[in-house]
Length: 149
Image 1: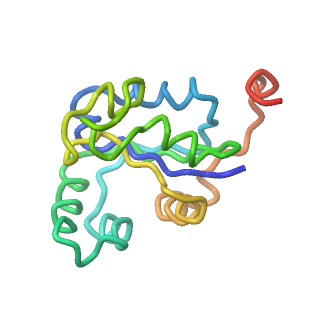
Image 2: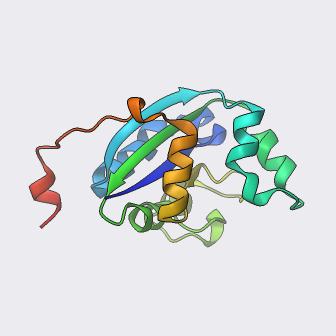
Image 3: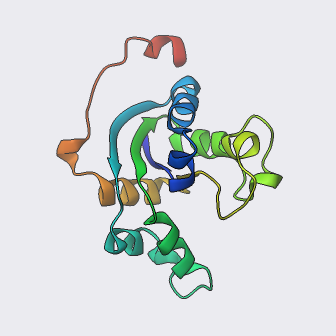
C-alpha cells in the first residue's frame, strides 16, 4: 500500500472546503490514516518545499503555506499517489479537468487548494515530515472488500 500526504492549503481552509476535499478522497476509496489541523512553521514549510529552493516562486510558496492553518493528512491505498493526483487535477486549476478538486473549485495556481505527493518516494518522505509513526493509525476498514478485488 502506498501512502500520500495531502494538504488542504490555507485557501481551502479559509473557503470552508475542508470537508468537501476530505470527502473526495474518502469517496475515491483511499483510507485516512492520519490527520491534523496545524499552522505550519516556516521551518517545516522550508523542509516541505526544499525541492523548489532557488526557484523564483520558492519564497512565495513558503510565505503562502504558512499564512494560515492547513489540514495535513496521510492517506493510504493501492496506487494512492496516482489516485490522489487524478482526484486533485492539474496544478493550474483552469487547466484541470472538471470533476477534479482543482477543476471544480479552483481558479489560480497560487490558490490551488490542495497539495498531494507526486511519487511513492515523496509520499513516504512527506508523510514522515508531518507525522510520527505513532500518529498514524493502522485500522481495518469494513468496506474494503467493496472497494478492492
